[in-house]
Length: 394
Image 1 (cartoon, rainbow, N blue to C red):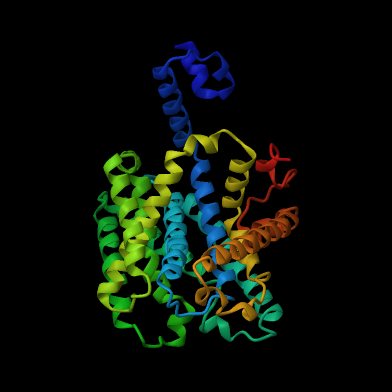
Image 2 (tube, one colour):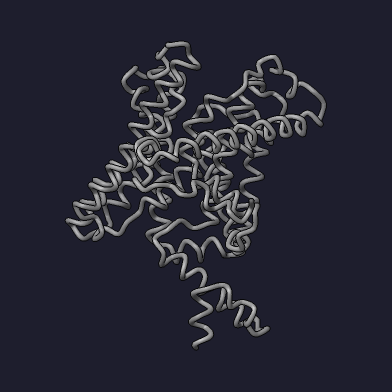
């Protein structure tokens, strides 16, 4: 028992572990328990979010040179396979980390959390929107009520306010029913709103506060809440071999079926939602299955986890570095079959460079505790090593 106790606390005792499969199974369970008891980031989920932000940058890079609508079925399937689940994945992880038991919502906790989120998602939004309007749009700020690139932070802040209000009701009533109602309403509102507003322009104020995006992605935020609320059931389900097979096969079949046939009808909204959900689950299954690899602290796993811990920084900064590749528009999707490989190669290479540049700028900004706090919501502590997670990779 003494060896087991030490082993559950530190990995350095692994050299003294007996060659016993049961002992190794206990080790994995201990690591999982330590992760869950620590109120800190799970490394494989951070790495999963790192993949999501890379695909967000990839989507914005390829938007500059892929001609829409895509009429090549195979190209369309690959493109949607890589981009359809990225935002649901972001909101799912955000909901996962936003969950707190109802009894933990005290006034000091609410004040501290809201202060942090206001700084990161409102003050940071205002600062980078101004920089974007000046540097990219040449002092034109019409994008604020048309196609605001920073809509994600607005929607995420609104979702958290809604969740906080419902969580306080749960605390007062002692019943989880309001959370179930919110989950059901969010799914219903997504289908109905997207179907009724297809082809119509929303009012400026509705666009500015991101009503459509908030309603569209609220279900995934709530799924993250429920995944954390019923964590044991979530991981038991995700680890189930039949669930794995169902989600993976569903995702690939829906991607192929969706192809170039999508529209804005209610039926196709259902197909798109099923594809996003199965894609989200497929990515979660993959990272969950290989979670121990991310705990090993290899340079690659450290890099992915570090990128995942800087998603807000990258999200704010990457719009300033997206290159203008309009001269390439129309080349890839009209070319032969290997145009898919060319699109992936060009898009991913440029995306990695953009992410690396954003991390460099972020590291410089975070040397100032004041800027780190007010732009990205970090704690007001001096950063002796702004990239501690990469110390083993250097």
